[in-house]
Image (cartoon, rainbow over all chains, first blue to last red):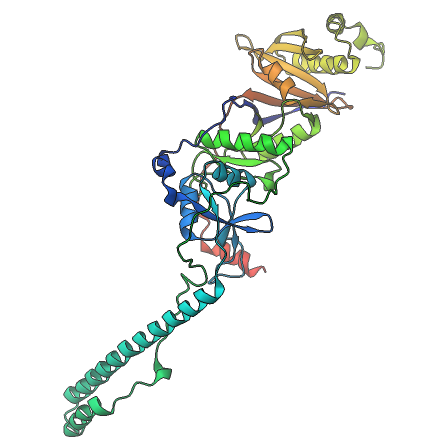
Length: 287
Length: 143
């Protein structure tokens, strides 16, 4: 019995990569060769992480988005807004490595760093205390002056107190206001030597044909100016944005396959249906 | 339906035509016939004809949605089959818009448009209005 067939509204696109591997073509490429754009990648187990703010900015300017993992100190128990570190996709890390824009983060020299930081902290505290005592004294004096001018009785008593203030005023340490700097807490690094990643980078990836396909698709689409993020939520390989993800919704869900890889028709229909429900075109990509 | 001969499909001229293409895949042939019937009788597409794809060894249909429209290729396939990106590309390389049609065992048909290249999806339909803080607060209070 012929049931009423459903025609899916999403177009499914077949997308054939040009054989030449794409090179990053973003306009900010001019200073790309400048060695100051090397980012320090820290490895946590096998996950490539970026910790430094400058590195995150650099990487974003190259058109790579990554995923923030950390919690923010001021808004801890939520995951709508996350903070550093930034986790890179394997394809993003590979791209950085191939462009020689990634280096290993130097190990922290704990002892030297710690002593230096402590000394600096104590100096800052002392300076702050001295400034605050001066300000407190002035504050007290102006308060007394105001009291003198407003009430005419007891003026002489107040004047005597004012004169005694300079000698007898003490600013207790416990009254000092201490400012805690959350911006730089724990993530400031000393200037480091840049190590370009060569063979001594631990080999972690399994070079399966699927991951190779993903990598080539990533490079090609990135080379065309699209921004790509992981598409785990949508059952695909990448979400493809026409511009920065902060400004646009994704247009495509990219599914990377080898040309001759066999795929169930049911899976094709399932991903197409999902795509139409979320208003994204499913892109079948093969190198 | 009861007084029709049970082999009416086998005797249908369109079926005979498709069989003559000698694709060697009776299941796909049956699927192609069901799609043919749907296009001609239900959707009333025009100039529906069948053609053999030598690379894929399947029966493809060519049809126009209405008079004067452009020709489209329809690729019928039983739903439990699998296919490769290459085979889809080969159908696309014929140069016409492609509709893939999955045919289930109960004759349910699902069509899926396949396009070459990157096609931006339709934008979400408006009108849009800012939900406002009350909605967010409501959601938080539910925890």
